[in-house]
Image (cartoon, rainbow, N blue to C red; front, side):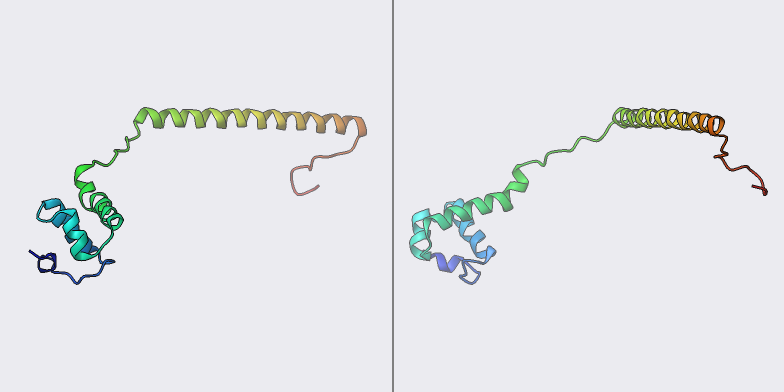
Length: 125
């Protein structure tokens, strides 16, 4: 039996349908590797590459399960929010202390040099 009679797609080695038909004929046991290699005049490495391609892209999705990404738990989100809140509170405390220090510096400078540094509130300045 000839291989060419069973392959319905045009004999083009770059065509994925042709490659899949060749590999399916080989995997089904209708033809051996040697028969396919001699009749189609392809190299052994090409046939092995086609087998890998066939398994990876055609059969692989049915045999392998995709790794599942675990969903974030509420406790993870809560922990992240608590950490963010602690960081914001720490920054707030630092800025409050800085502001207090600047106020003290301005008060001391106004008393020592008798220079009004702060603007007076209201229309008359």
